[in-house]
Image (tube, rainbow, N blue to C red; front, side, top):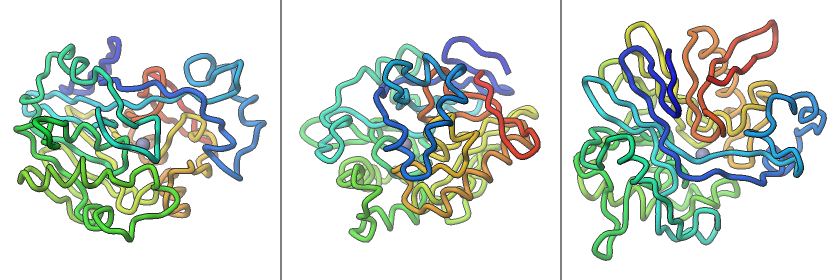
Length: 298
Ligand SMILES: [Zn+2]
């Protein structure tokens, strides 16, 4: 495992963080709800400030971004952040967003046509946005040559009104502009419940709870493993308090169980954890110390 800025090497994988937004101002009491204990902030303040905690405001710093993974065999993206031009009246942070995301991708030496696969951990607003872009008055797949892999169960669920609950209000409308156009274009491939290996060394692993059929993605290469955890956590504080769900976790009990499972998995396998929401490097190692977990940013 080596690292340049925003670039990590795991086995023969080159993994680059493609930035979209830095999110400031999240009140932990709001994000984590009733289980939040303010003492946690004091205990961890020293290592969180300044990149993961705003010291003056006592608010969390987060990020939206996705991960570009390049190997001799494929070029793929894990999740696609929030996207430009989308109507998001229920979540103004993402409403009519304009970012230089595609320029960031170009800086990494990759054009949209170079992406072979898009792997989606789940179908929430900040993970599927760049699936599509607005071109000639319609939403079209941003990556014209990519196969988009996603949970078939989530397609069924988020494509229906049954999915409209309090936790996923920010994602209303997302299916129509960011998922359906990819399916209509014939570029979607459904991953069955239970996940499994979709490409050599690339495995979807069920980690449900944050969303109905949320899946993490493990990519193994030359004896090393990258673990793309999706939204098992939204901030590194949750490593130390895995019982804390975010306000966006739809199914509380299974979200907690999956977070704990993921932390154990990464610690036991010494897999490198890649988060879509941590600020600073957003990648790190999890170790276990008796009955608590410990996080080390890479
Ligand atoms: Zn998210």
